[in-house]
Image (cartoon, rainbow, N blue to C red; front, side):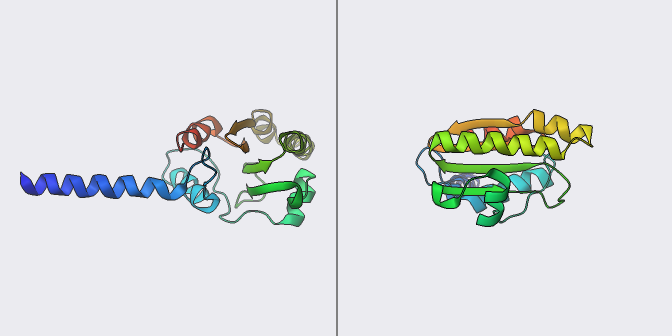
Length: 157
């Protein structure tokens, strides 16, 4: 009995410690790379039906081309695009001026809609894009199970 209690206590401490490594949106401590790794892992494990995303954010040049915003206009950003380049799935996280970010997201979604006119299933994903805010972070999710990923992100506070 004593051994089982000790094992339970160790597991509780271990599991509790692992969650904190992602940080918090509300506290401004979110770790983008660890977050995307967790999302990819849950997608790979079948928890979510989301395309696997690259584990590195797009660079400044691609940010300007895709979102019509420069990195120096933002406090921070991370945009994770799919491993399979044809898919419109992505997760974008921005911190900075809300007006500029909303404008950038709107332009980006319009551009994605124009690019996806050939494939109806991609058009549907883009039409259902989720835009929301947690703390100072403005988030865009395009993909299957976006609402589940949103709930997960909201739980990190």
